[in-house]
Image 1 (cartoon, rainbow, N blue to C red):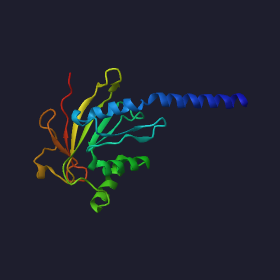
Image 2 (image 1 turned 60 degrees about the horizontal axis):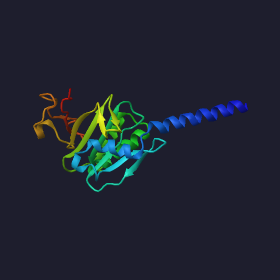
Image 3 (image 1 turned 90 degrees about the vertical axis):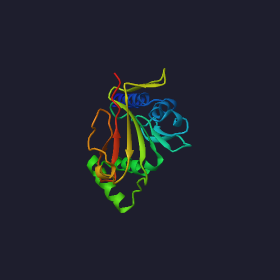
Image 4 (image 1 turned 120 degrees about the horizontal axis):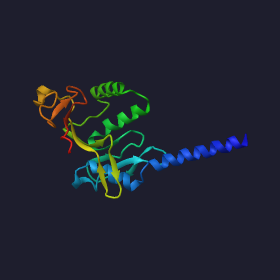
Length: 197
């Protein structure tokens, strides 16, 4: 029995150690997260990342209009985002609902209802999110670069439609802008530059 208890303790310690090793340190998370931001805005952006237990925490306070999120170690692939601070109520509500176990469709419906009721404040002007992602992407700490990842721009324009903007419902050319979720709180322009060879 004593041997079994010691085994469980050692195994638990090993699991914790592995989890801690899989989460990059604070400086690496800040560096990789801000790579999604325009270069001129990286130094002053607020950054959220993950502590040793995998909890989302503030890594650095910001002095401009951008909030950046480090790559989630619990998700496959690589993804960092930087978005205008006016999108934080929308983003934070999504995180809360995911923690409650809500599905993507449930999150959409709940935020749609709350936005229509005015309890979820959405930006009153077009508001941009910058995204850097790749299924094989990674941050190279030696070169301070994100590799194997592609860039995307998302411009949120709540309640906008194809008719109100003149945007198509799908890209007309590779990387061309189009509107997604038109007529909803989550209406946004998608701009995905073609991946570099």
